Image (cartoon, rainbow, N blue to C red; front, side, top):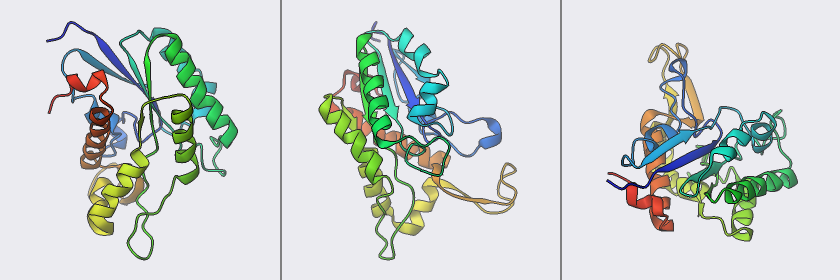
Length: 227
């Protein structure tokens, strides 16, 4: 076992977050992700339901993360789901979203740690021809642009998960998301058809996609992934 000690800090929204018992079987991808590394790696999941870059910062959730970073640490940043919706109180303007992403990068690097950006995971929405819709176009593009401008490693989850949805199709892809029939689970007695958040199976698939990106980026972290 390596003597190196690495912490991967996850900063984002509900698609990444740990879930309470009353929310299960909804599962954030950060949960199975945390189990995929050797003993040298600790995953600290700071993601919270309903947060945008703006509210994550305004609530003081980022500062304690930044203060504890060390040179062997990584910060995985994935926002956009809530930032991009004008009707939500968490809405963040495009200009502010860019500024916030730059803040995460700058303050991560000040501590010698490595920032990694992830575009938001595709919502399960298909057009009439069965092609996955590009549901995050603007804010995914902003994330890509900041990653390019600041030379930040990027895992394009929006692109990768739309490809996964296209491969599975409208019917089979339902299993990735939190879809339950009435009476199927006590937490959702009326059932649920949620095309944003994941089932346990879906969260594992999303974690696999993230880990595929880690490998392709050839991050040092990749050496610590266990199958």
